[in-house]
Image 1: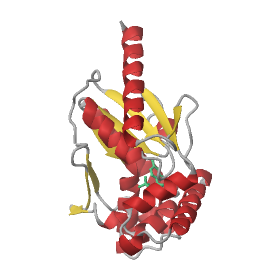
Image 2: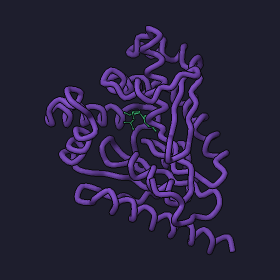
Image 3: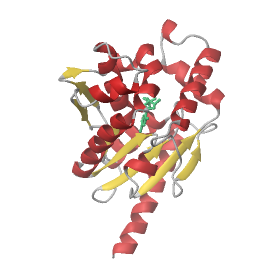
Image 4: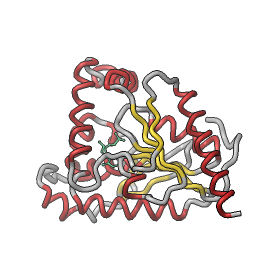
Length: 239
Ligand code: DC
């Protein structure tokens, strides 16, 4: 991965939100690497707590049981964009959190307010401690977790484009057919957008980028340019 060819000023905080399959992770990682920033995948944290619930026999559809157990797992995220990591109770969770089982359960677990409070606190702590700033990707980063971010980007894409990208990422029979992937994405977006606590939402001051007809490189370049603009604006204001 390309490293720090361009620079951003100290401790710039960037929030990148949007539904699944819009290129959030690839874009956020690449932008962070280019600008020498940290990178945090908040979806991985919700997947990690979901994996712990499933592994420990908690009924993920029982919000009270999930809330009661939510403080038990210790979730640690590594923020190097070249090699992001996620562990639960000291176990590497990078593989298990990407299974269909976790994907199918994560919206229910992440809708539980106690889970959101814990994970949001974790995210704010990580962002506050990032020495050179950080790119944080998720669903509610600009709207709830980091409302004072220097730049908020909301990525969108058509359901067809998102399903095609997600199918390309999944391998063999995990991918299923395109129509099934599309339906699953739409269902998960609907659950994430309609939950009561901190739903998937575009912050009022976020810049919306429709990635449907853009290549990954074009989206990366667009976001880097937006960050440079936000940083120049910040420097102008504070000068
Ligand atoms: O980005 P992802 O598909 O790995 O995210 C998995 C799920 O985690 C997503 O369906 C909803 C939840 N999530 C959330 O509720 N808030 C976030 N900031 C990030 C993810």
